[in-house]
Amino acid sequence: MSESPPDSKPIFLTPGHNAGDLVESPKWKLLQETPGLVEVDAHLPEHLLNPRNQLFGGFHGTYVDMISLYTARTLFTEQNQFKWSSTVNMRIDYFAPVLGPRFLLKGEVINDGRTTCLVATTFTDYEGNKLVYAITTLKKGQ
Image (cartoon, rainbow, N blue to C red; front, side, top):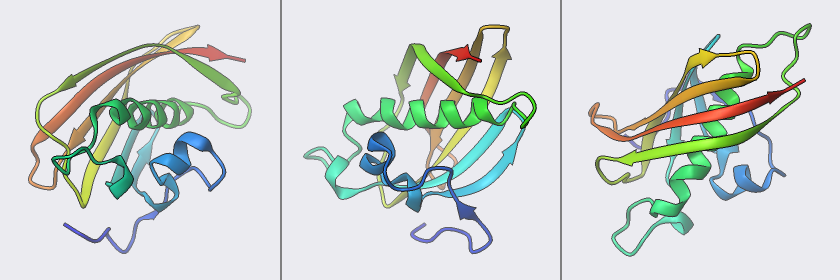
């Protein structure tokens, strides 16, 4: 699929965030956002491709980190604001190559603890094939 759904809205980051600019996150489309769950339509920028025209393995972690952070933020309200976090652990399992032009990212909070938050991130293609699965542990800051 080469186009995002017309009713989707821009993703959370504006230009000026180094990791976000690398993966061109301002061009992503937020498909669903509920507390503890985020679904995103993302594109695959040409500068992130390996020689086989697939997402280069080293860049998967950038996508995972960004989706994990955004998903964790959905748990907070203005009264209980998410001020910062640190990624303390990330495990990525690769099942199939991520090909363009577009793919889907889903972030889901698995456990929201007092000081940490565990988030699962899944990459799928538009045929529903699971491409990548990752688990991230974030240390929450107040």
